[in-house]
Length: 303
Image 1 (cartoon, rainbow, N blue to C red):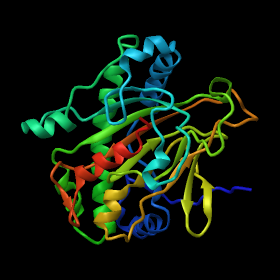
Image 2: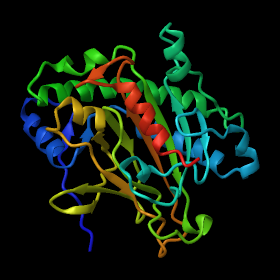
Image 3: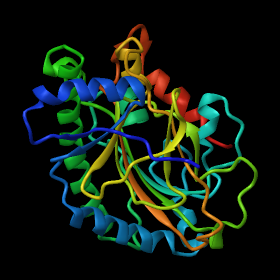
Image 4: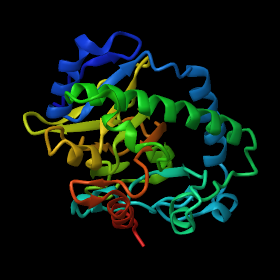
């Protein structure tokens, strides 16, 4: 039987000095940790979920005008992604829908702005969502830099070791809706709500819900384990750019989201997933960060 992974909970409101060894250990072993003291109110997260749920429950024909491909700003419908593709795992498309948003404040470089800083699309059917998400994005930007400062110290460097490269960063934000089996039908063999993969950027900050068809993480020592859940905490994992930045000392957190469970066919979950990156043009150990990001986004697109 699958057991629950053990991850440290880091209180961002405390002096970090005594917590740095636990941060380093967790990121070496699993690439994941939990954080409290993050300052993001539950009321904001709940309001986003309620608004997004109203959109996801609309008929497909109403959502279709907002449809985009991976990396776009809008609605990612059923079958749009197969995250397992990024690691070379042949899986059926992921059993989810997403509302996807990203950085939009232009840099002044036309080529960079045309690819990475475009206006977001806001569904007219849920007009309250725009203000809620913009508030959340502002909180996540600040929180991500706080986490990166902590990681700089945990690596034995200055606090701004990473954040000196986030002066004008790109980021992505997905509201992932995982409908129940009563909507998706029977999963295909090897099909997940999100297939096994690692994230692509620096840090991902996740607000998740507990469920039978929920998040699992992978370690070489224990294989796949259920991710621990604490409603007061946010889940942080590092991505490929961060793993590269540390010369592989820290591992990009491999994870997946289980298929909708047969014994709870109406279970639907929603995750708020903020993917933080860095300023375009940043080179990490000889790899141009955004060329890598674009290649990985293209890799998980099913069409």
